[in-house]
Amino acid sequence: MALAWPTWRAVRVWQRNLAVFRKYSLPSLLGPSIGEPLLYLLGLGFGLGTLVGTVRGQRYVEFVAPGMVMSSAMFAAAYECTYGAYVRMMHQRTYEAIITTPLSLEDVVAGDVLWGASKGTFNGTVMLTVVSLFGLAHSPWTLALPVILALLSLLFASLSLVVAALARSFEFFNYYLTLVITPMFLFCGVFFPVESLPRWAQMMAKFLPLTYAVEASRALMQGRPSFDVLLPLLWIVPPLLAAFLLAARLVRRRLIH
Amino acid sequence: MSQPAVTASRLTKRFGDLVAVDEIDFELEVGECFGFLGPNGAGKTTTVRMIHAVTPITAGDLVVLGLRVDREPAAIKRRLGVVPQEENLDPDLTPWENLLVFARYFDIPRVEARRRAAEFLEFVGLTPRAGSPLDELSGGMKRRLLIARALLNQPELLVLDEPTTGLDPQARHLVWQRLRTLKAQGVTQVLTTHYMEEAARLCDRVALMHAGRILRQGRPADLVRAEIGEDVIEIRGDEALHRAALALVDGRTLGREQTGDTLYLYCADGRALLPTLSGLRPPHLLHRPAGLEDLFLKVAGHSLQE
Ligand SMILES: Nc1ncnc2c1ncn2[C@@H]1O[C@H](COP(=O)(O)OP(=O)(O)OP(=O)(O)O)[C@@H](O)[C@H]1O
Ligand SMILES: [Mg+2]
Image 1 (cartoon, rainbow over the protein chains, first blue to last red):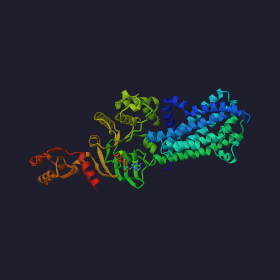
Image 2 (image 1 turned 120 degrees about the vertical axis):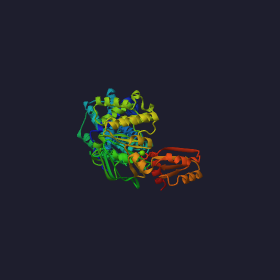
Image 3 (image 1 turned 90 degrees about the vertical axis):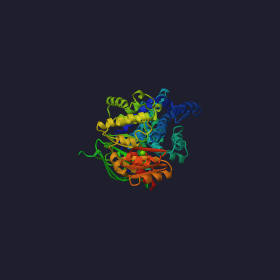
Image 4 (image 1 turned 60 degrees about the horizontal axis):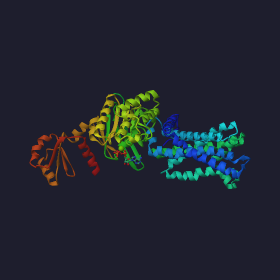
């Protein structure tokens, strides 16, 4: 079955999700996607920080902060486009309802990805604000971080929707979160410099898009932007497009017979 | 003659090896109400889902409102209202919010959307429940809300897949009344149903489906007269009683059907036969006008036995 390109109508799906979200905004805000990274930041940054001292000349809490901001976006996008999207796709038949209107299934997929990415970007920005209030941001370049957050969130929203389209139950998401998301959280330079990994693991980390987002945001927050750290962000784009197209294809295969 | 609202020729749908819809032909005129009848799995839902351009067709041609379903689904869906067989409302939103969110998919401006939401909630008798959490609505209320939702874009063609299944008699009559009102306003309707009474009351024409094929198609009254006759006499009893009855009326009926303990005699004038049968003193005898139900039992019953 031919794949159509999404249109601006995808915004209608985004608006629908916002209407639902507004009724339940408080619990989802305090939920795992912001609360958890915040706890990590406080516990590890300030707690472990007293043992570690400095990393690359930064206080440990300053070193960890950009990674926490980035990973909060990753988690939020991942939760929204796995659990959230799966409920809409399979349990509530929201996708089916919407495609009886002028919207195509690709519009719905694009709308859900945009929504997941918005939540990621929003959560990351809230984290960024908190981090700044702790006095951990030292440069006006910090204001550029939401762009990276948006790019990263789009990637993880698309990737997670691929997983949702394949999932047979919620159980499936545990594997994804444990085997894909958590390793990124641990090995992409959030908690320690990638260079301190063994050589083979460093090579692996080079393939993980979060690595580039963390490096770039760390450099920006310190006020030393350079092409060397910003250009690699472009590596996020190809997997993002591939994941989106795959998600659209898999959702179509799942729902349209 | 205006062009038909829907034209299907040799329309076919396969799911893998299963032929769900098998080269069917039908045409819907603008302004009429057309009904698909048939047992579970006959292919009714598959057919109407192809009409509203959600299920892709496998073969044949299907033109809806002058547009081909495989070429211009969005343009078709803009002008259609759909009540699906399985409820798919937004459970997190109230009825009012459900309608406003749905109106946006059709680019209906906010003020107009509010006006229509209020109008159609009233139309299906849900105004008092406009702000209730959805899980506090009964099944019948949800089906009525689905109908209100299908009307938001003021459709030219309304597709209703079992619109009254699960409704209490009062709600069912309300829905029938509303569908007749819409028809009077010129809205073409295609529906599926398991209720012969519903088909007889609402549909100008029906198609009787079985195993993906249309076995009979036409005006309900014409079909019944042609296949069954005017009257039916039902006799309940044992095999011996049935045989005795058949011997008495031999040659004077148009046909007969036997399901379990009941013998159905189809005839042109039932009253004339009653004196003949009175000597039998059957424990249960009913004389009534023939209806779609008889046609359904005869046609679908025979197909099931094949
Ligand atoms: N997505 C699908 N994949 C495979 N087979 C399907 C699918 N949808 C329907 N079928 C099959 O197609 C046939 C027709 O199904 P359909 O839902 O159209 O029947 P129906 O007449 O609407 O029945 P009911 O009265 O139970 O609603 C059935 O054999 C059904 O199992
Ligand atoms: Mg059906």
